[in-house]
Image (cartoon, rainbow, N blue to C red; front, top):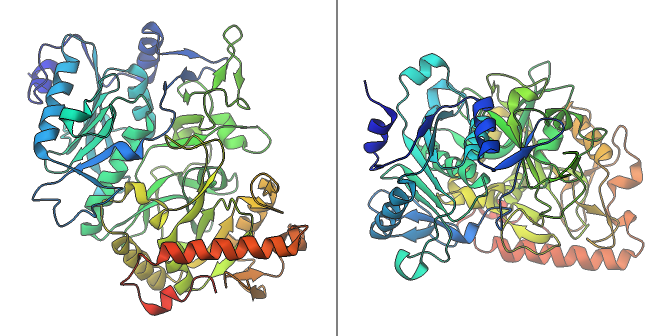
Length: 526
């Protein structure tokens, strides 16, 4: 019978110290505390620090360029090419990095629909990283583990520093995807989100060939089977708005839409928890308990009490927990075809309506645009203020293929299943960031609930004079004046100026989509 060392030897990993394979949550917590990787909060959550990297490092992400990827990957700033030779050089360093060290291994799955499940393996030297992955990926049953044959492997080497001069990297940090070797190397960063997003990148490459549209979104389902999809980048409210006590949560971040319906890629949630409160987000609040991993949350060294309002380390504080910590989670995470699709954006200029209905052409335009504001801390290099950004398909950093491929799939599925699309601004109203204020969560919830319950289907709308989107004239539970973004500004002329400025940014960004149908290009701002 093969030992763990025998199996790892097939990966070129030799001369290892103790190997810990598929430890339970309690065992991983014990190891993490024993090794000084974190502390327990008063609620029992494991609190860990990620060092200098408190978010993803997109400028350090590479894809190995070879015969498999040469014509299938959309090369550019998102998918930076790396030669197979440089990959081999760095992989040799990773293999040496593990020698004579304690090594943790986790077998997991990605994709709740058995038709599309991807078996994966994670190898690393941090116990808390394995607990994070155990929470976020799908956990195999004993029967599944007995025949587990990983198709992709993550090698985590957080203390390993790359040398740009010889390794072909941009810095000491590198996240490298090799589709041919079916391997992901993560070097020079402790930020656990890199592991989760690397598997998402893999699925974004593989699934379109199987007729499945991968989506950076959260999904929930009503008691009548009504499925709602929430697209959006980090900080726009995917996790918060999908965690609804009156609906079943399918998942909070990554999903597929197949010919049979929707399904979660993951087995857990990765929620932002800056300013987390029991009153505003009770489902997430109650998930902070034993087994949960908290990243960069400030904890009192004596009482172990948590301070969710502190951004001493970063605004991007996170909670990673199994999805069954959400009381009304749907397990397995498989649902039907969506009736409603929400595009979430945090508009830093404060000019987009808080909710608006999109025509099919506008849906395609805004999906390709993917406008939002990047929230401070979610990526390396951002300042303290949100920055306006356009991220195709609301997930450009994770798309190996050309955005047009994903947009085409969405358009086909929206048409086939007659889903209604809304644009929801969870960002600023009454002024731009710094003068206006963030939209009150209770009103955003009221608008979203009204939309996915069909209460806005027959409400009269009026086209926005600049963005052309259809703004409802009324919404249950929401003061009428809140629906008109211009009316929220004290200076109407200043609003018009900002709206025109943002419209110009939309047009400038969309100019790169040169092969898009004219009716879609015309669906943008006037």
